[in-house]
Image (cartoon, rainbow, N blue to C red; front, side, top):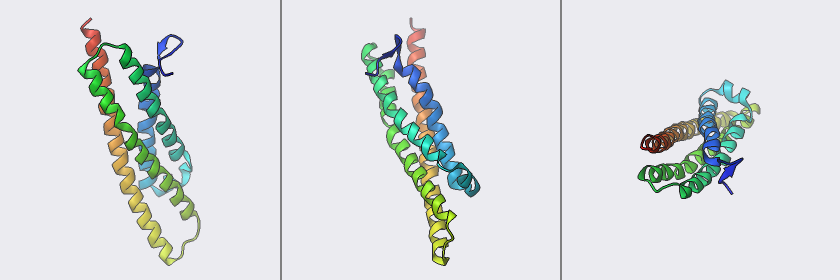
Amino acid sequence: MFETVFGLPVHPLVVHATVVVVPLAAVLVVLAAVWPRFRGASAFWPLAISLTALALVPVSVESGQSLAQRSDPSPLIESHQELGEGLLPWVGAVVLAAAGLLWLRAREARPPGESGKRRQRLAALGLAVLALASGIGTTVQIVRIGHSGAESVWTSEASR
């Protein structure tokens, strides 16, 4: 299913979208978490972009597995696959933070009572911690995956 499109391997095509959308989602969610004005202005976009990232990750992984089956076995490709398979939980945490921030945005639009203000601040703090941790983890993971993928491609190209 995820092998070729118009005779080209799907993986290098879809992975370019993934390496743009995943860090974009992480940045948007972190900004929405730490900058209330941005949270209000960004509306549903951090969640929409995060859900797009969440959809792209399995497509990237599946297409990569299809490509790996057609390639010669290599420790670099195996390392790249392992790293790629570890991205989904990170992006899932970004989506969770984005959903929480959209909920918080809706709560902030209503006038809170005195105890409601405190709960909103605690929710904002907890979501900021989740957004920062998942955003940083996601970005580090996508850089590691991209580096290992480039290394596996260019190392095999250089040896030809």
